[in-house]
Length: 476
Image (tube, rainbow, N blue to C red; front, side):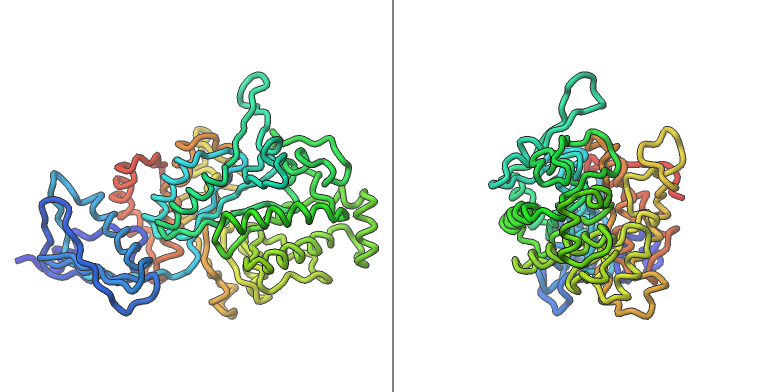
């Protein structure tokens, strides 16, 4: 006679692991894909309950988002268990809900311009893993991808750079039209994923300055960078015209992106030009500031307020916490911690909401999977193994005394300096995204890497069936 132990041996290899799975006797078997009866229930917003019995499969939820999450779990099961026209599932009761509200993935479309078709395909697979935030990095030194009607040179000039991978004056270029952006946003909404745009300010501004040289401290000449790194030329902190451009950029973002969040960057700003610039020196005197570095907090405060007036909440990389003695970071600003965990610890101790994406904890998917010269990816101070990604926890031991509600969640990021094709991107994303997804969805006490590794064997076959390229080397 079939019993619950038999069913546990045929365990459902779901990723991310649900909050609870209780196996019962028997198996559900169906020729062809079965119908699923939906049932309203008093559950949390994103939660769902899935009951698989011998006779039927019932999905319960209280919201469209909850039903969608349950459908994605069923989609996983159908992808792996539907064989030769028959599906067989062990009877079980699944109760599931997320640990964190922010479960994100960032794609850098500045260094490499990914097509709308690729992005939609990627969003579809993000949804399979209950990822609910798509952070879209749209501007940087190497390309401006956002159309702004009153500043057309941002895309006419700022979206083109020399492609040094190819011989001759070959250009890498591209920007998203308003219609294409709306397509991405709409498709993501259908997958219950919120698209958060990022426009990096006031640094990483080469594409802006190449388009409008008057906004820099020296007046140029500038170019859209074909190199990668950190560059001295940033927006001139003493020139009020930079805020005229930013106003129009924020107006465009407000029109195209319904999300309440806008990422303003704020990372890796160099202060050399501000030190030598007469306009910036006058600004320092006007504001009674001692050093050029304090001008960044002045700019950040203005940007946060500009967005707040538009009903938007600003997110910035953890550098926006620095040098805020006079121009304090407004409490509504959210800090995204990337330089290890210390930025998130500090921000939460100051009462700011935090999103954890520490590069040292497996969240940077452009890093190599393993130490091997044949592996693609960056190799700064180590590698980002699947195990390291799985070990990331948005709440660190140092945060034990803070209000846990300040920790919105976490995400992984794909920077594209070296990732010049969609298939390479897929290889870098999977299966580390699967590991991060479990870290931000599954209760901490339910997480076990050996168990994840066993489930991953089945799950990677699902990704194969969806045509996703994947890394398959050592996980540790």
